[in-house]
Image 1: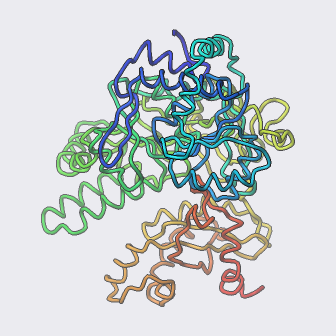
Image 2: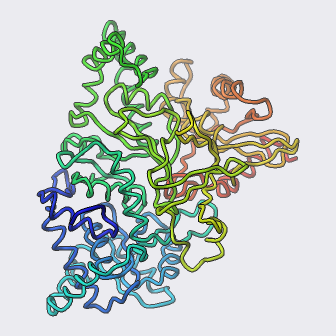
Image 3: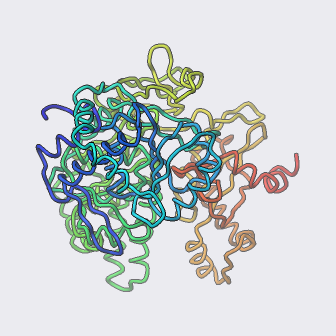
Length: 593
C-alpha cells in the first residue's frame, strides 16, 4: 500500500510490502526470546478473522481480550477488525465485579483469556453475565476452547470467508468504530470510549512522524497493551517497521532490555524513578576517588542542559559518559535509548540525568478519549523542553478555556462513550472541542505544560483554591517520598497523606543512629518526623502561604491497583484514599472539626 494507514489492519499491508522482517514481534518466555515474523502476523490475523466469522461474528460484535502483552494480542486486534468486529482490550488486573460490568456493558460476544488463571476468573464471571458469550483460552488446554479452535473453525470455508475479509479491507470506512477502550474509573464507573479506525491510525501517525527510529531498531514493551498509550505506540512501531519485544514482566525489564538489545521503551514515571534510584544506589557504596568521580558525573547529569552544545560542555558530558553513563547503558543492552514517558508528570532531575546519559526521555500527554496523544516532545527536534509535554500533534487544534482547561479538536477525538450520549455531550461540545479536564498553559508559546486536574481543584473555607496535583508533584520530587494525596476541601488549611520510601527511611535511621522499624510508629518519632517535615516545608516555601501543607500524615502503606487506591493507570483514587484515611485525617489533622 502507499500513503498513511487509515484503518488499523492497514498496518498488515504496510508491513508485508515495506518491512517483511522475521521479528516484528518477540516474546520473552523463561528468559528466551520467541520471534514472530511479518508473514506469521498477517497469516494469523487473517485466520482469526475467518474463524470469528465462521463462529457467527456479525459487524460490530464485541471481542474481549484479557491478557498480558504477547504477540497474540496483536493477532486478535487485527483479526477482530478484519472481520468487521470491535476489539475490546481489558486490563488483566481488574476485580471480578469490574470484569462483570465491562463484559455486560460492552455486549461482549467472544472473550479471550491470556492465562489459565484469567480463564478461571472469567469463567466464573461469565456465569453471572446478563447475556451469553463464548470464552476461549489463547493457549490450547484440555477441556477448554482455545484460539486454535477459532482458527480451525475458519478452515472449512476458508475461501468463502477470506472473500469477506478482503471485502472488509476494501470497504471498511475509516470512521467505523474499531475498538472500545474502558477508562480506568478513578471517579466512578468506567466508560467505554468508542475509538474509530481513523482515531487510532491518525494519532499513531501523528507521533510516528516525530520518531527518528526505523526498521533497524527494536523497542521493549511492558506497559499493558490494553492501555491506549502503549497500544498506539505499538501501532507507531508497525508504521515505522520497528520491532516490538515484549518483556516477560515488570521484574525482568533490565534483564530483557539487556538480552534484547532494545533501543528504547515506553514507560511511566514510576518505572523511571525506580531506575533512577538504582543508578543512585550504584554510587552510594563507592569510596575514595571512585566515589568522587561518580558523584561528579551524577551531579552533572542532575543539572544537564540538553540545549547546550559548546565544546567544553560537550567534553564534560563525554567524560561523564565514559566514566559512568556508558556503564549504566551496558546493563540495559548497550544502546543509546529513546524513552517515551506518559501517564503523569516526572521529576525534571530524572529527565535531565537520563538525557545526559544518552537515554533520552520524551514526555507526552493525552487521554483515552483523544486516542490518546494530544501533545508530545519530539525526538526529531533533537531535544525536549523539560517540564512540558511537548507540542500538540500535527493536524489537531489545541486551545484553552477561560479557566485554563485544555481543549483539543481533530481526527483523534473519540466518537463518544458507548451507550452514554449524555456523558459524551459533557466532554465534547457542539463545536467538536474535547474538554480534557486538565488545566495547563503554553511555554515559549508552543509547548504544553500541565498544571492540574480541573475536577481535583478544591476550595478552602477561606475561599482560596488549591490545585493538589501540582503540590503532590512537588512533594514527591523528594527522594524520601513515593506518593502523596493532598486534601482540605472546606477546611482552613490543606494537608496531605504522604507515602514514605522504606529504603530511604532505613538509610535515614542509619544516619540518625536509630533502630529502623517498617511501621508508621517509626515515622512518628520526633527526629524522624522533623526530618520528613523539612522536605515538606521546603515545598511550602515555594508556594503561596495558603497552599502550605500542614500537619501531614506519613505512612509506609502501599498504594496499589490491587487495594483500590490507584487506578489501572496508577492515578490516585481520591475518594478511596479519603475513605481509607478519613478517620486519621479527622482526628490527627483537623482535630475532629
